[in-house]
View 1 (cartoon, helix red, strand yellow):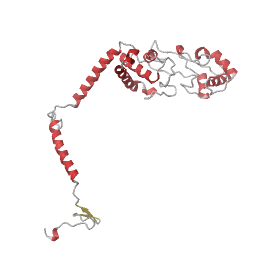
View 2: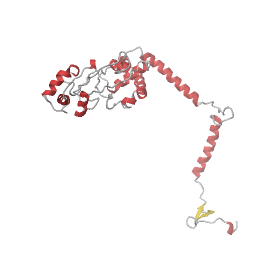
View 3: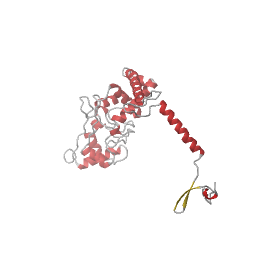
View 4: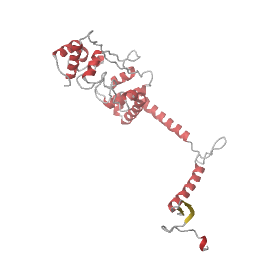
Length: 288
């Protein structure tokens, strides 16, 4: 090659230039790294092989199926069928044995709680939260404070029939409204709220509050605020509050109580799902 036709070399790097120049900046003719070139070539060979073996190229009315005849749709259908078969196998067994027997079978118990967790996320987490921690007016299922009982049978009944729901066997309780100047005086309501909070050292004791509580509240909540599951009266002496534990909120609940509703699931979920949900919820914080 003659001297005048040789590519120009960059003075700083000694690399040939391509002849392109922008605003005094010259493009160098650096070759691609060898490893990159080989990777590129291997990927081309791999794609050709994949094209032959796996479904790849669309045709007018079908597609190239490949030598393996693989179908992602068929694979999903087979997985779903396997899950259904496993569900029938374990579910059928679950329906005819007790909760104690399920817990003794590690495989069956794992199947039940996993299924219950999935059902909880689908049907219950909207109110109770994914972590089942609840919110104001919605029960926290991680503690051992159960208004209607925390055994498996009691939890199942709550799931089946709900609370103040559209079922004949639903749990139902209603705290009366001690409306100021109608049922109780504002002084009596305030004193009672303080007395209730004094169970957990959060309020001020007064004889007026004690007497009003004994006359109006102890029949359901117990003399020392221990609650009564038979009528759905919550404990008042454990510092766990469904509607808040401040003086203002307790006063409001006495004067104009709120009553939550939980839907019944007996007519919406199958028997196995109800049993799975029961075991999962019990595992979070169930207690007798």
